[in-house]
Amino acid sequence: MSAAGKSRIAEQISGFINGNIIMADSLQIYHNFKIGSNCYDQYTSRNRVRLINMFDVFENRLNSFEYSKLIRNEIRTILDSDMNCIIEGGCGFYTKFLLENIESESENQ
Image (cartoon, rainbow, N blue to C red; front, side, top):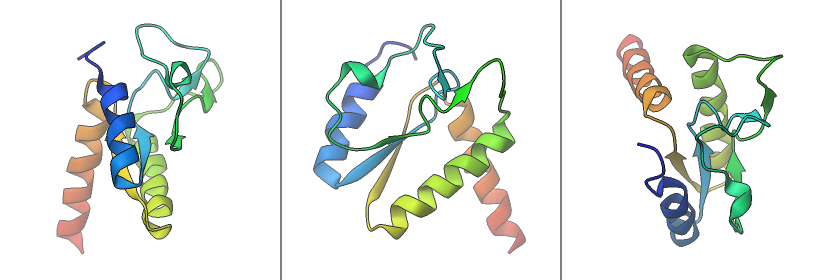
């Protein structure tokens, strides 16, 4: 769902719940690659937005597994600092992979 206002809503919610936003957008994780994707730099961000503008699309291409490792580290860091997480953005593919992978890991423990 593109241009639906997900970023603006996540920014507002993060202010209410003492949260950090973790970007789950396959385009926003790359810097200088803003095709068809909203950008947080157009807002005044009161809270930290993570996993945004991190990699060069020509030098680093992430798959869903690599992304899930990155997002898990961010989630741990945020929760360890007694803050809340908001996972936002994209079409839901990265989020779906993350949730399914978490479920399969918990069954193995």
